[in-house]
Each structure stands twice: as structure tokens, then as C-alpha cells.
Image 1 (cartoon, rainbow over the protein chains, first blue to last red):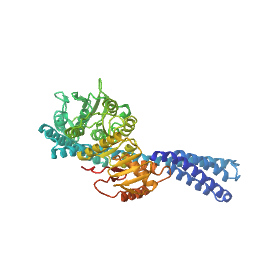
Image 2: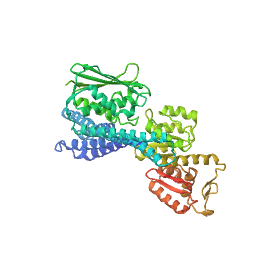
Image 3: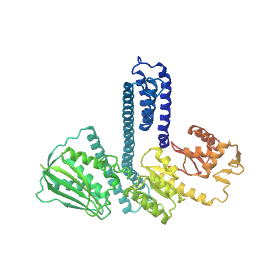
Image 4: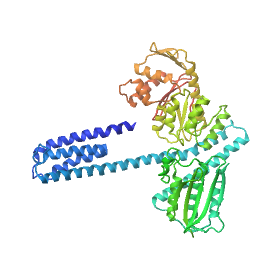
Length: 336
Length: 227
């Protein structure tokens, strides 16, 4: 509904802006002489600002051209776009530069605000999808359990399992949202301690226990791997997020691999899945919140949190294509 | 059912199968387009949040050849998504989290609507409960009594009655009823209220139901959407 209006508005704004500039030129022309000084020029900047505000960049540029023409009419010889004196030519050039700069700055600012607005809408959409989808399953399952249409005990038990699993999923989501809130508010300070990677992986895998289903987890943590210097709760969230992603994007029965290796001054943890990989479209902003999964309806905040946590520990996180197919996410942490 | 959320798909499949419906699941938009052509389902439940395509675009492309009802499932409470889906050819919508009863009621309305369309032999007359419209003669009778209608009320009632059960958006109603001249949702509301007054109530009477922020629909007597 808003797109045709957006297309119409720059044209309308440009036409209206140029009309106002013409009007100002007619009014200011007879009044201007050397005593009025910079006043006409300053007055002429106003329509540019207004056009940039309502019509955007292109409309502002159109009005810039109109304004420069109008300015040349006002400076002597008045009423002609010819400019007599070299100083006036300079004034005209300076005016054009100022006009275009003002138009660009104002329009740029407005575009930025529109982008923020769009992101907010995207955020709202993905968070509501992520929260409401498990809620929908829980509500539908419990209503069916309350009624008597479903009588098979095995099916009733399955419905109960779904309620529990989806409640767990909601819990993980809320944990992620809270972390994101802390990260964005700047409160994220790791409480570092020496963490054993093997233990960390076991705890994380157990938290996802019910998600595994037909998936297999292959853990490859060499004996004698150095401990890492990290906040246990935060790093656990990273591993859980990466594993959950991997499970979600793997076909049933496919293994999910977790590899740990000592590298340079730290330890690299890699989670590898056999899913369909990552679309070229979203690769560029995989770790930005609320952008990667916009289409999938999943908020994609998990990876954004991983990145924030890893970087708060002074490490790095990267994505690469797994050998064969699928995705490989590698996070590095400093050794203790 | 077109949805990529395994838990929701499983729960709804259990609920639907327990009530005697057969369910075929497509997890992506592409699979949905392919399977719909093969299975020719009586009704499609379409989640707008899909991994590969925009649900609204999928709805429009299904609608280009698929004639049975489409009920969309949305997660955001935003009206513009629902309106876009309805304008893309969806018949009805539910918002997550919904109750199984809500979804089942909409499925029943959709299937019944489909049957009535198939049963139409004489398109110049429409009957919903004890409402009878003779489109050619421009006559409306309710419970056997002829009722006067203004031209706008007549067009509004005929459109709603022909699409009984379906949600018609403000935009659709305005463009059909006001026929090119600009109408507003405010004037639409006034006409709907006048129509409600003329329809009155009663067990055999169709009900004109408001879908807040989205549009209106005419429900056959005895149909309850919150069941």
C-alpha cells in the first residue's frame, strides 16, 4: 500500500519544491542588492532541506538545480542567468556545492531513519514468529490433550513430549533475547574461568538432548586439549546455538560434527552440518541480528549472540562451506 | 499443510487426523507448489513464514490455478500481512497461537463454502439461511419478507452472500460496492451497520461478522468460528 505512495512522493516533492523556489526567486529578485548580502542564498536553502525531508535524495537534487538557477537570477544582472562578475560566479559555485551537500546530508539522515524503522518492523516480525510458533504448538497440543478426540495413549504421550520440547525451545529463545538485550545495552562482561571443552560440549549437548531425535552428534575433542579462558554460561550458549542451528538445518539421520583443535594461542571449536548450506544472499550478514533468517521466519539472533559473545572473549567466529555440502561455523577462544 | 515447523505440523496433523481429515505436508514453498498440483487438496493450510519463498507470493501463485480454499497462518498480529494474504487470494486466516477449534472451524467454513459454490446451479439467485437474493430482479427477502435495499447495500450484501464464509477485505468491498468512486472504511462501516439492522437476528439468519482491521464476512447460520 505504501510503495506507490513512495514512488509518487519524490516527484510531487520535487515539483512542489521547484515551484516554491520559483516563487522565492520572483519575490527575492527585486529586493536583492548588495546590502541584502547572503540572505537570499540562505532563504533558498530552506526548500532544499524541506524537499530532502519529504521527497528524498533525487527530489532534493532536482530542487538544488532549480535553486542554483534561481540564485543566478537574483545576483546581478538581476533577471538573467548570466553572471557578470567573477566573484559572483564563485558565489554561485559555492552555493551549488552547499545546496548539494545539504540535500545529501538531510536525505541521507532520513534514509538512515527509514532503514532503522524497517529493521524494527523486521525485528518485531521475526521475534513474534519465533515466540508464537512454539506457543501455537503448545496451545494446540494441550487443547487436544484436554479434549477426548485423541485417545491413543501413544499419541497423547507424543503430544505431551511436544509441549515439553516446545517449552524448552521457548526457554532457549528467551535466554537468547535476554542476552541480546544485555549485549545491546553494553552489559556483557565475561566472568572468565578455565573451562574444559569436553565438559562444555557434554553439557551443551545434554541441553539439546530432546532435539537430537534421529540426528547423531559426532564429537572430536582430542585428549590433552588446553583449557579455554571463558565465561562458562556464555560459551555454553554459543555451543548450544551452533548445535541447534546445525540440527535444524540437517536432514534427519545426518550427523552433526563438533571438532575442537588447538590453534595458535587458543582453541577453535567447529560445528559442521550436512544441511543445504547457506544461501549466497544471506552470507554477507549471517551474524547480524534479525536479518539472516528473515525469510525463514526465524529471527537469526542465535548467530548474532554467538558473534557478540566470542568477540567479548577476544576471539573470532567465521563461516565456511563444509567439505561436501553443509555449513561449518568455527569459533575461537583464548586458552586459559 | 504448508509449514516448516515440525512440532506444529505434528500437533496439527494429529488434531486433523483425529477428526477424520487426511493431511499431506509440504515443508517448503516449492514442495507445496509441486504437491498441490499432484494431490489436489480440498483445502490448503499455508503458514506465511516459509524458508524458501514469501508466503504471500506463494498464496498468489497457488491461487492462479487452485480453486479450493486457502487458510493462511500468520505469526505477527499485523493487519497488513493478513490483508495482503487475503488480497492474494486466501479465504481466511488464523493468528498464532490459535486454538485447534479456531482452525477447525475455519476449515469447516472453507470446505462448506466450497461445496456451496459447487452446488450453485442458478447464479442469479443467492440463498444463505433464510436470506434470499434475486440478483436479476434486485430483490432481497429475509425470512420470506421482502426488504428494501439501497443500491450500495444491495451490492454489498450480494458480494458478501456470494462469498459466504470468506473474509472480504475493506479494499475488496470498497472497490466492488463503490465501483470506482472513492469510499472510505468509515462509510463502509455505516453501510454494514445498516445491513445488520435489516438482517436482524435469529437462528436461521446469516450473521455479518467484523474482522477487526481487516474486513467483513457473512457467516451461514449455525456456524461458530470460535468453536
